[in-house]
Image (tube, rainbow, N blue to C red; front, top):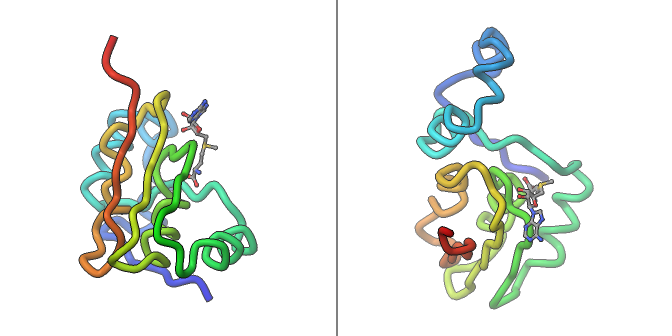
Length: 118
Ligand SMILES: C[S@@+](CC[C@H](N)C(=O)[O-])C[C@H]1O[C@@H](n2cnc3c(N)ncnc32)[C@H](O)[C@@H]1O
């Protein structure tokens, strides 16, 4: 069963924000990275369940294509402390947006892999 975490800014309030503000990558990076809002969910509940099933007990997991980190959060909540979660997204526009994925003290070590700056 999916575990839901509450965020300081409820969805009903978030919906009041103009679309241009809601979709601005820098605003989203700040809001998601600070824990004010959750990352955009890019998977179904069934896909999240499959991710948990596949990741459970693994020592090393690689996610290619992280975006704001919604599936990374699922993986962080599934993997144990001895595990390492490698997050790869060289084209991500939300450099600080995946912070929530690394916020579980008993969870895995999260390692970000990004393309070097040109
Ligand atoms: C649909 S989003 C991923 C959603 C994410 N897994 C989640 O659950 O929120 C696709 C992501 O893949 C990244 N991407 C596209 N091509 C890639 C590549 N060749 N290697 C790594 N990441 C890539 C994009 O920057 C984008 O953030």
